[in-house]
Image (cartoon, rainbow, N blue to C red; front, side, top):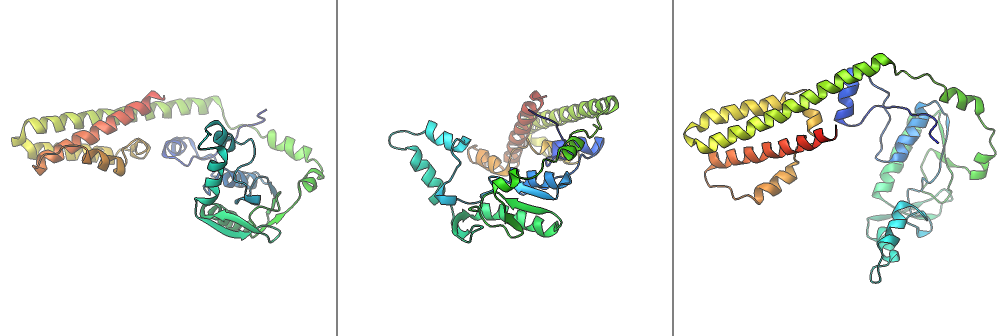
Length: 290
């Protein structure tokens, strides 16, 4: 049962746009894993003792996934006679760039570069916030300097912090009817801005088409397309829209599959039409979500 929902600052341009107009919610660190953000949330909430369960950051006893987890179950649902679950699970152990390190008992442990990157994040935070004590509940997990091992039983033996929990869950909400109205206003401005970018992309397509039909006016249409490019690049919604813009890799792939003419000017107009078409389609799909 959910006791309380806490809003924090977004890592993505869309959320950052709303916070720019409505106020930030509090930024949490992101080390690339849910566990890093969870640790930082506990710190932000004021806890000085943080217990981490399941933070193996390695392969204790050469196990890749906990029994019953989504990843482990997936190997069973997709297994077949010539490719059983054991093959898939062992692949995760031996195909990646594995390294040897130590657990909290000093025993050798299999880990990899990605896991060690997460461990480095936790180590850096332990150094940064020395007043916080962090514990791993598994002594066979990857040792993180600045962390200590504590048994599950030692955690269960602690006195329940009822008053602190009630105090935390009773924090008043900052959401008011005025803030809802403000959100609606910013949201409508966002939709108008995205619609404006969509219209600009459509204008770019039509301009490129006209340029292809009237090569004698190529200079004029080139200038018009430059103005359209500048309109998009200077838009306050550019960073939000960047999430739906085609990637350079996707563009290169499309251009390689397109039969472009030898005339560089004509080829440039065709490329512009393709790019604006992709932007138009992407924004259209984006707006459907709202």
